[in-house]
Structure formats: C-alpha cells, structure tokens
Length: 142
Ligand code: 5GP
Ligand code: ZN
Image (cartoon, rainbow, N blue to C red; front, side, top):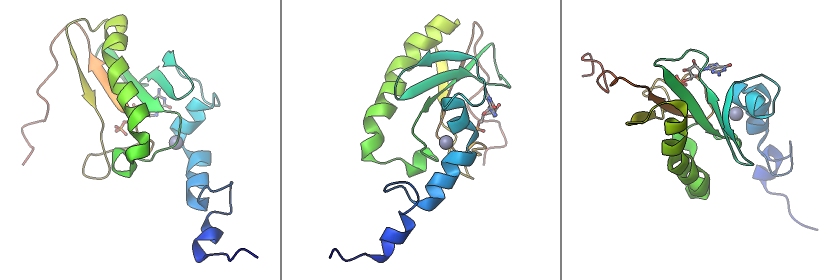
C-alpha cells in the first residue's frame, strides 16, 4: 500500500489542491468574475486570461488582466506561471490601444502588503488614456 505523507492531508480538498487554496478560490472576487458569477465589463477573454474594466477607474483607460487560475499574488507565482504571465504582458499593448491608450500606458502589479495589494488574486492594471499619467510614485515614497 502507498504510504501517505503528512502533506497529503492538506491536499485532500480538491484533487491535489491544498484546502486553503480551495477556500481562497471559493471566496475570491476575481475567481468569481473569472467563473462568471459576478459580472464585469470584459475587454478580453481566452481559456487562461480574462481582461475587464476596473470598477473604480483611476484614468480614462483602466482595465485589468488576470490569470483565470487563482494565483494570490506575483510573490506567489512560480516558473510554471511564466507562460500565462508572459502572454498577459504580450497582449497588453494591443488591448491598451484598442481601449484608447494609443501612445503608451502603465502596467502595475501591486503585490502583497508592501505593494498595497487589495484583491489577493494576481492582476495587472493597465492604466492610460489620451493624457500622460501622474508620476509613478507619490512624493511620500521614502
Ligand atoms: P489592487 O489594489 O489589489 O491592486 O487593485 C484591486 C482593484 O480591483 C481596484 O482597483 C478595485 O477598484 C478593483 N476591484 C475591486 N473589486 C472589483 C470588482 O468587483 N469588479 C471590478 N471590475 N473591479 C474591482
Ligand atoms: Zn482568485
């Protein structure tokens, strides 16, 4: 008989998904948007990636790209996530142009407490418009 390791218990929830991650996916607002349980104004969708407008836009163009897979933050991403993260970066320019940011934009991935990440599902903000944005960080940055 195959010996169970201690770590197997934590993986009992969904296949090899750790129980805490399963719970995070159930509660996560961006997972709910990815599953279509909460509406969003989509700008892009494929099997792995969803793009949608930010509910509280900081500029005339402000949408987000997320992996549909629940990754809590960029600090939690691993090498296996490189293809989807690379595709998010690679499509951002085209989508920004389509949304009206023809001369550039800012891509922001707030990460963890220090990065002031509010929604713990990795997301890349694409922010732009017709006018240049403010400076990257406020003067209070120490
Ligand atoms: P963070 O501070 O984590 O980088 O950014 C989270 C972003 O998610 C915020 O800009 C916020 O406006 C946006 N947001 C939070 N809840 C929702 C929602 O239910 N729908 C949409 N479209 N955006 C949301
Ligand atoms: Zn999620």
